[in-house]
Length: 166
Image (cartoon, rainbow, N blue to C red; front, top):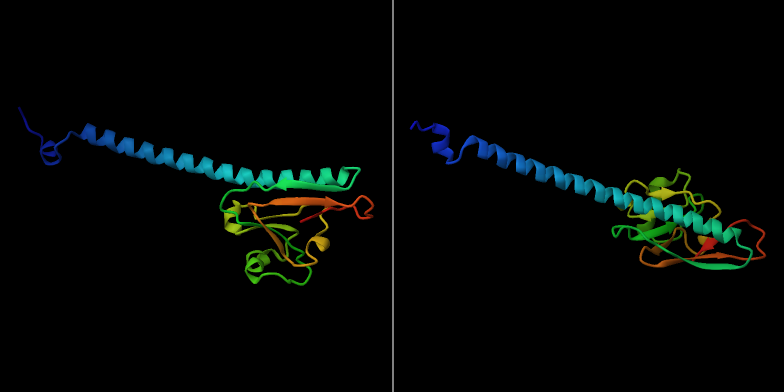
C-alpha cells in the first residue's frame, strides 16, 4: 500500500477536511442570516411604533369627545426614550437628551428616539397633528422613558386640530 504524504501529516484525508470546512462555512452563513432577520425585526418594530402612534393620534383627533387615551410604547430594548421636540424653539431640557437629537435641527421632525443608534435607521419622524408647542412648553425636548405609556389628550372644545401627549 502506498502512503500519501498529506494523510500522514494531517492524519485525515482531504475529503474530510473539505467537509469540515464546508460545515463551518454553512454555520457562519446561517448565523449571519439569523442576525439579519433579527435586525430586520427590530427595524419593523420601530416602523410599527411610528405607524401605530400616528394612528392613535389620528383616532384621538377624529373622536367626538374629550380624549385621554393610553398608548403603549413597544420599541426594541436598546431604545431608552421617546422625545418630542420643537427644534425651532429654545431648548430648556436636559443637555444629554438634546445632544442626542440636535443633529436633526434642520430636519422636519417632532418625534425622536434616544439613543439614535438603537433606532435601526428610523431615528426621527414627523407625526402629524401633534401640538408640539403644548407638549414642550414646560421642557423642550420632552422625553418619556420607552418602558412607560403615553397619554394622548384632546380637549373637546379646542379650536386647534391637534392633540398632545403626556
